[in-house]
Image (cartoon, rainbow, N blue to C red; front, side):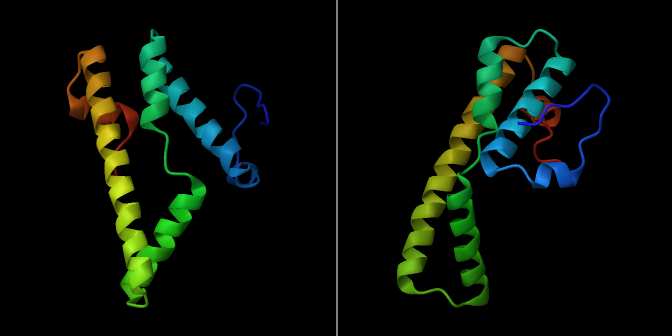
Length: 126
């Protein structure tokens, strides 16, 4: 992964050339760094929770989910694809439920409300 000097801004073009795994790693490291700056004494447990909370779907799975969602929207989805989308949706819902539990655990560790942790992490903000 490219390294940067302090105060050097990273351009979107520089991020665009990273592989998906390098970009995911960069984002996870940035999230942990942001959390440490906000609360300098982030424990190992909190760091692990943050990494797990921010772990998304695999790029391949996310792409397929998006493709099938688009087919549903355009009403061009086959029955087999509809069943595949249903399985993927179940997986995503379980993934999101796990993420919610982890955010709750992080809130307990930090002695914050769930909403405060969500705000700290920049989740659900538009």
